Image 1 (cartoon, rainbow over the protein chains, first blue to last red):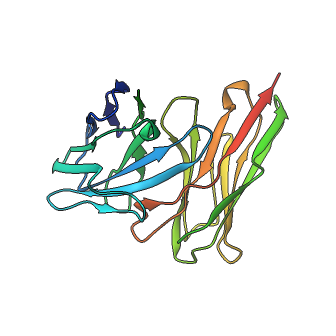
Image 2: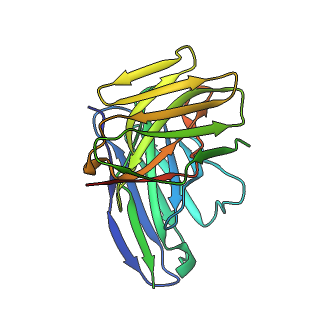
Length: 115
Length: 112
C-alpha cells in the first residue's frame, strides 16, 4: 500500500542551528504534502501545505521564514527549521494524499529536540 | 476555521467490550471523515474513513457512522483487544479532503 516516509526519525540540534526533515512518498506521486506539529499529549496542528513547484501556504501564526518548506519533486518535501530554539522541540509529521481527494497517509514522524 | 471536538477524552474498557468515540465538527462543507490511531511516538495510522455520501462503513471490528445533519461521526470498535489501546483522532476534511483538521483526541485503554 501507499507509504509516506520521514527522515530523520529523531534529531537533536543546538539552539541557533537549522535542521532539515524530509518527507517522501514511496510508491506514489504527491503534488501536495502537509506538515503538522504535535506537542506532547496534544493534537496535530497543521503548519503548512507544501505544493510541488510552487510556494508553500502557511497556516495563520506559522512563521514562513522560520519553517522553510521546499517541494522540489513529486515525491519529496522538506521542512527546515531555521535558527531553532528549545520551544521548537516537537514531533513533526508529514502527510500526503495518494491522489487528489484520496486517502491521506501519514509519515512516522520526526522528533526534534533543540538543546 | 473548523472546530473539531471528540468525546470522551479518555475511555477505559474491559477487553472484549465495545468502545465508541464521537466526533463533532463545525464546518458543514466537510465531506471526508477519517479516523486515525496513534501509538506513542508514532505517526497517525488511518483505520477507517467515510465520505459524505455514505452513512455507515464497517471493516471487521471497526465501524464509522456519520450524521451530516447533526455534524458528527463516531468510531465504533467491537471486541476490543489490548492492542487497541492508543490515542484516536478524528480529522474531518473538506474540498478534496486533503486538508484535515484534527480533533482533540481520545485516549483509549483496553484493560485485561
